Structures are given as C-alpha cells and as structure tokens.
Image 1 (cartoon, rainbow, N blue to C red):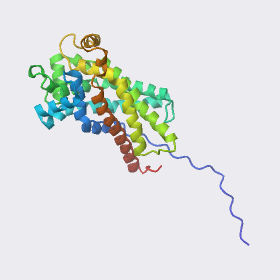
Image 2 (cartoon, rainbow, N blue to C red; image 1 turned 180 degrees about the vertical axis):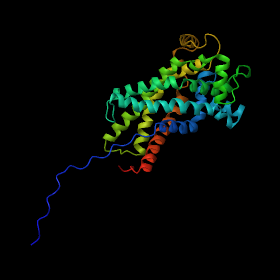
Image 3 (cartoon, helix red, strand yellow; image 1 turned 30 degrees about the vertical axis):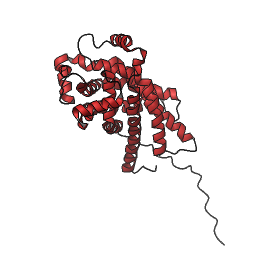
Image 4 (spheres, rainbow, N blue to C red; image 1 turned 60 degrees about the vertical axis):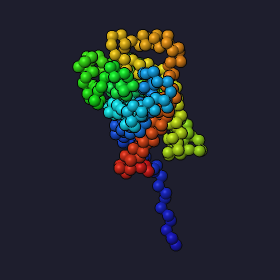
Length: 302
C-alpha cells in the first residue's frame, strides 16, 4: 500500500526581486544616437525658423549646393553636447520625478505630465548652454559671411561665447527654452508612457517593438504640435546677437508684425518630420538599451 502524498505547501510564492534601476545615462545615450541620425532634418528646421528660407526641400538643396552633403551635418558636435546635457538630464529627472510623486505605468496622464513638467524645468536650465551652442552652430552657415560666428566646434563656441559676450550668453533664451522643455517633456515623455500603457491594455499589443513604435509615433505628433510656438521663439532668440535681441516680447512683437500669428508654427512640417523619427528612434533605442542591461544582469525574462 502506497504512503499518502505529502501535503501541498501552503506558503505563498516568493515575490520577484525588485528590479534595480537602469543607468541614469541611458536616455541621454539613446537621444544622442537618434539625434545623430536625424541631424540633417534638425539642421533644416533651425534654418527655416531662423533664416529667410521658406520650404524644407529648398533649404536642404541650398545647403547641399553651398556646402555639399557634409553641410547637412554642420554643427553636429553641438547636437552631441546638447543631447548629453539636456536629454541625459531630462530622462534622469523624469524617472526621479515619477518616484517623487508616485507615478507608475498605470498612472493617469495628468500625473505623468506633472513628472514631465518637473523634469523639463530642471533639464531646460541645465541644457541651456548646449542648446545655444547647437542652435548657433546649425544656423551659422545660413547667415551672410559677415554675420557668421565661425565657431570651429562646440567647445570653441562655448569658450568664445563666454569670452566675447560674457557668461550671460549661456542663459540667452533660457525663458523660452525652459518653457519649451516643460512642454516637450510633459507631452513627449508623458504621452509615450501613457500611450504605451493604454496599448498594453488592449489585446492587440505586447511589450515589444510594435508597441514601442506606435506609442512613440503618437507621442511625437503630440509633442511637435504642443512645442512649436516655444521652439520658434527659442531658435530666433538664441540665434540673434546684440543688445535687446534676447527679449522674448520684442521677438514676439517683431514676428507678429512681420509675419502674423502663424509664425509660431513656421517650420512645423520639418519639425514634425524631424521629431517623429527622432522620437521613435529615441524610445526604440532606449527600450533596446534597457533590454541589453537586463540581459547583462541576467534579468531579461524576469
């Protein structure tokens, strides 16, 4: 006669160990990779906003005609400086802000937007010098020769700005930049998290590239529309020089008088064309970098 089976264990399953936070620089690294790929479109957007160019294709042709294909990558060192200051800071601050206010994957949109606003405020200040350098490097070649800054690279631009214009040059346009940063992070980062969570609630998506692509596509469109007015003002103020040229109200009055209210959406199409692939590339790259970290830690399937 067989002995009775031992009683089944009534102990609850051991909880999964809490995942260690990801390295703080992953967001900045993902943004730098994405911005390097889409730099020609970003360059065209800045030149449309700051110069007399009217059409995106016309501006690209003008750049290639005057500087060759390499001209489409003018100022890329400024782009790298900006991404490794502003973007690194905003992704880190967004994650920290979500912890601070208790926002999780299923949090309402307003809570995620609040974390994005906090992150945008911090990153806008921290990244302002890199933002000024990037805009000047990108817009320089579109100016007449006598008005160009002729910076060699991002560090030359940074040192010359301080030497020739004083430390205040590093905070030129900081108001519109912080405002734009708040709009960007409360729309792009928050809407990506929101759309991703909503998609995962349906039966059509899993946590994979298809979900990440769809969520980032929606986030890019939202962010472009929300940020366009502040983006135009920021580019025009930062690209100017001389006394009185950094006044936000003066730029608004002059632009309204010369171009009408729609100046705020000048460059929307190239901005969307740049931001859309950039947003998609940032989040796809970030998700893959996170998977690589999980794989290295041995927690990929955890």
